[in-house]
Length: 177
Image (cartoon, rainbow, N blue to C red; front, top):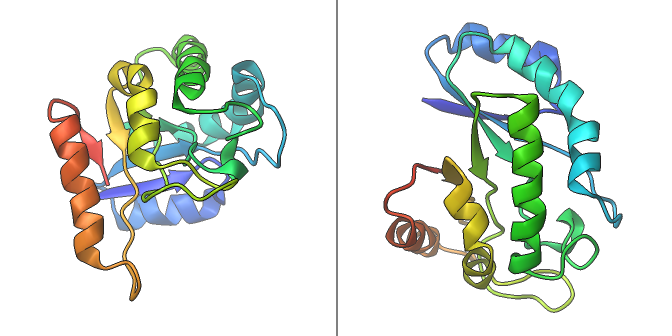
């Protein structure tokens, strides 16, 4: 099994998960609320590194990968304020990756999961267009995060199709669902 937590999660809850799942592998998402702000890679690192170190200490001795950011194809996660599209995000993320590699040498870092589905005006960019425009970042990562959703109005098959597409595009990369 694999468990994904955010750096902002309560340390006590993470301790409980570690105790209950001693053999699990872990994904830690560096979490920061963009709140409509333009955030540089340096600021992102500065605002997340202490929580990241705390979480890594809780998971000492465990197999861990670090997901740098979340759903960057959404307005609420930096789209239109910090980057205009996937290409600009790739430049931002590659700089962030280098900063994190300097701060945490030897760790593995994954490209963030995108919000799946098509574009929504002033809210979201299509995940396929975004990942292709930011392919340089995905290629530089040690793996890819993916978000697969389903509901009564978004059938599971559609989610599985999204996953199949990622596998086809990045067959040689670990993919974390």
